Image (cartoon, rainbow, N blue to C red; front, side, top):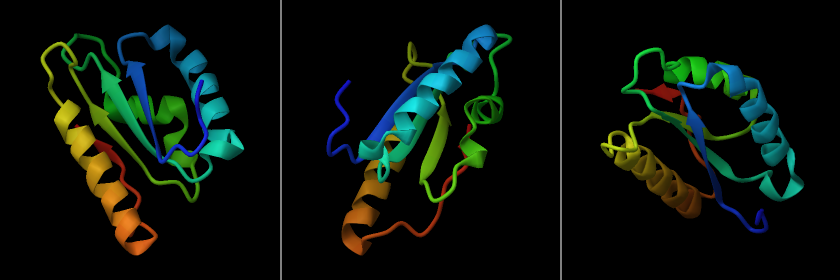
Length: 115
């Protein structure tokens, strides 16, 4: 895994796989606690939102511990990768947030869930 000089992390979660959300949380926490990722902004794609029984973006946020993060900029975006739904919204957020950071040296807000 390449982490050096990463401005952002895009983490994709299978929202249908409730049994593995704990594993996803452990992996996610390991990545974001790496010192090389300390200043990276975080975009989480909660994929498979089109399927019955999928966790909502808020449930995925809770499962990953996003609401517990302090001094981190993050955003969760519900997606259906097969249809392309939500992907551009998430990437637009990422691009605008990175631009804001570049222009000001800091972001003005921490984003929460988005459907």
